[in-house]
Length: 378
Image (cartoon, rainbow, N blue to C red; front, top):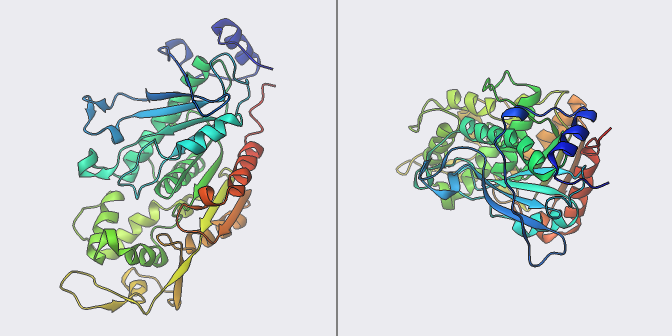
């Protein structure tokens, strides 16, 4: 059954379904003027909608860190199914770059298949794109975007009682962290509101354990961007709320563990969809330098450096950037906690699976629908 955007009909139906709007009476109107996507039959899009006050010229030094999002709709306002599934996408880019305009072809495809997709910008750890921001600030932006969703529901004349959230690479890490914080808010202690519950979370090659030596080896071996161990660790220290100078490594690892989704995982976490790649491996006999003037050391020494008591393996599986260990650790943790999950490990490079293997998109959409099937007016 389809609903019009008439506010009286919409409110009555929403209340009868037991759906509660946060601050409904005080909501400023969100005006949607969707434009049809030329290559699509039904899909429409609204670009550059605000979800907060940090806009270019008003607190945002760069468009990529403005509190804006693009909204992909499976039809014009008044033509959208009342129970349309809602997916919030958090882009990747090593927490340093990227924007909401990535993967637009996939969002259009999802809208054609009945999904509503919001793709958001958020603060980045990049001085040229608006400042050296932290994981906590990125999560605060996601929380602000989630708080916008009841406004979207009202404007579109639909019900959005629960959402799916997901992203690729850094966006996968942040999506897992945000979703699991809703089930275990005391680890990060950020006081996030979580206005709309998370029905499921999707990670496309998102790091699940950024404190593990395997993750550090895989990232360190991706030398084109990070250079020495000092360079790499300084960046990770800053993201986790530490100093941008190299601190005590083990102290820093503790903060990285705190910001690892696996640390927040418990039996109350939402169903999780995992898609990871594996294209090769990094031998731990390979060498790195702690600093530019340092002597080469084998990667195996990183285990001792970060305080791990495990014996280093001969090699670390990798998709070219992220260690395969992040897939193994996450799926093992989900199984142990009794959290429903769907998982695939594919022989493709970092975040290339959905584009290079179309059947994985079908698999993703099916799982999103399965876990969002509670989006029904009862």
